[in-house]
Image (cartoon, rainbow, N blue to C red; front, side, top):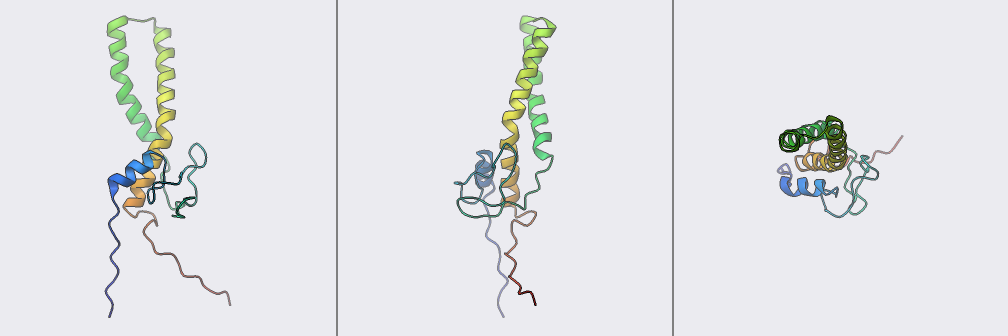
Length: 135
């Protein structure tokens, strides 16, 4: 009788950092995004399948959370120190908000894919299915 195979632990911090850099969480070499937010089906360097990911709306929610927490104190500080015209402040902070959100989105998506890979979520830890012959 053989013992069931225990899956090896995948390092969370390393996978998270590689995902943040938009690299494959398995090898760290291949780019996992082939356009702005499209995840490749497989890593071009090592062949690790990425089609299992389920990032969905997570990166957008996290981007809103981070941008709000970063720019809210900036907005208050700018208002208290310089009292700019409301139109100047609104337009400047709007550009900063959009820029920061657009910069964060692919990085957060990569990080979420890295977390899912490291925790073997959504099919990342499954063994490949055996080929079946059609009869």
